[in-house]
Image (tube, rainbow, N blue to C red; front, side):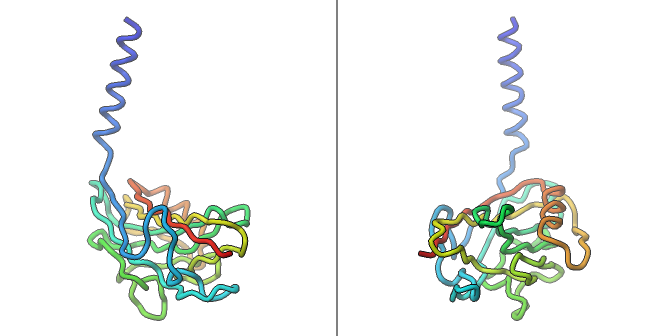
Length: 185
């Protein structure tokens, strides 16, 4: 009897998990999961000479209760002890479903109206392209769409990437990730 109850519990938990699982999907015309990014997404500085262009990102399948979105781009392989924030953009209206290439530029005003870009680890409130150290091997860049349960994340001026990340994660309903790669020889 114990094994029957245990089996029923496992089935109930499996059913519950699949019932609440969403279908949030992130896609891009510029980057792909497990593939190397182009020179367009490379930083222009620190010895890198790329275009520093944020990639096109599109998403669909927002879960019920989504009130806004946030996007993060993070390199866990950076030799800092805490990774490297390349981009965080919050307060994207729930009716927006894509960012065009270059939306992370502050000089072109292509980010969605009402959204805010958080200071990245280069010290700029914009997209900061990839620029791993030469000879450091392949780095993994996680571009993540977060469906949020709040309309707006209130952050103080000059908020750190860690604080923004905390607030984003505290209000995330569901995520979808494209993990692209880059390497400098």
